[in-house]
Structures are given as C-alpha cells and as structure tokens.
Image (cartoon, rainbow, N blue to C red; front, top):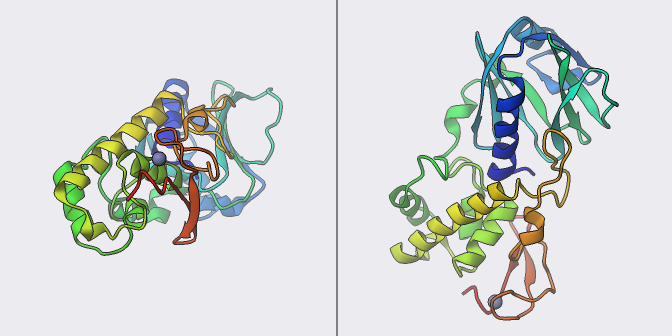
Length: 267
Ligand SMILES: [Zn+2]
C-alpha cells in the first residue's frame, strides 16, 4: 500500500498539475468507488475549482473553492494526470475531467480505493494520529510507545496512533534503529525511542528522495516508477545478506504482515 512517501510524492506532483483546474465532469464505470454515491459526489465537485492538494496520513485531500473530497489509494490505486486524448489506462474506473482537457484518472485494479466527499467521510480525518515530518515529536512518540505492550512494529503501523507508516517503512526504520520488530513498545527506553523516531524521519526522507517505492502497484502521476525499492534495507529481502553485518535477513509474520529483520543487528 502506498505510504507517506508515495502519497506525498503524488500530492506534490498533483499540486503542480491540477491546482486552478475546474472539474467539468466525472465518469465512472464503478460508481461504488464514489462516496456517498456517484450522484452526490458529482453534485459536490462539478463546476468546482481545485485550490490545493493536501495530505492526511495516506489520504489525499483535494481542497475545492467550496468543500473538499479525498482519495484513498488503498492497495493498488494509482492516480494519473493525462490529456483527454491520451491512451486509456488499465483499470481506470473513475475519471475527473477538467475544463482545459486534462483528466485525473483513478486506476484501481482491486476496487478497494475510493473518492469520498466531506459528508461521506464523517470525522475520519480527525481520528488519525500525529504526522511524522510534521507534528509528531520525539516526546509524543515516546508517550505513544510507553502506553502499550503491543509489538513496536504493530504500534508504528496503527494509523490512529501515528499516521502514514505502513509495512515497508516500519520494517526499514526498525532496522536502522536496531530494534527487533516484536519488542513490546513499552520496553523501549527513552533513548531507543528517540533513535527510532529519527529512523522513521530518515526512511521517510529517503522514500521521498527516491519518489516512493514501486515494488508493487505504486506509480507516480505520469506513470513513472519510484526507486526506493532499490534501497530497501530489510523489507522484502528475505534470505539476502544484511548490508551491515552480512547475516541473512529473516521473515516472520506479525499481525498478519510480512516482517523482515536482521537477527544479528536487531535485538
Ligand atoms: Zn545485520
């Protein structure tokens, strides 16, 4: 699933492409991807101008001259900016058409992704935890960890506790911090919590620098791949050698997710 660096990369690109554009039509062959309904969604966005594209956790927020809507890419969602006569994109089930002939195409193979207006969202945006690289501080981070004995990796990925961290960057941050993913969160000292906090910032900054990770579905808005997958530290590298000590990277399932670590470096 696209995580903070992937969604933020898309946000930055969309800001350059569609701010100031007016939505004139919405086409969809999977109306269930529009919430609360295709009719209501269309009514809320038609004729509106995009003023800003922001982000909260893994959601993109399209601020309009009146109201806003959000896009959740889920596992396989892609957003492409194209011209109306450009070749069709696979799985493009929703297309927002702009006045000047540009299109925002929402390609979603698994159909779990959605666009929702503010009414359909209810209060969900306020339920996310603080944002790394923004309002998450080392103090807040430590107070989140010390309140639970769940494995630290599970806590990192809990969007209600901290926003934007998914499986790739949780694994790689724990490796950088030399912390075993199964360590109970409340067993980490303040010093190790601070090291992990810095590691999260570091992996996110690297992810942004490389334009995200395209090991699976994620692509940028003109169809380019990101390249963070070439720099994975442990994520997806079962059986390969640790860059630091040469030990083989191991994989276990934790909370149903593949969890990768170096048994020598991470204690
Ligand atoms: Zn190692």
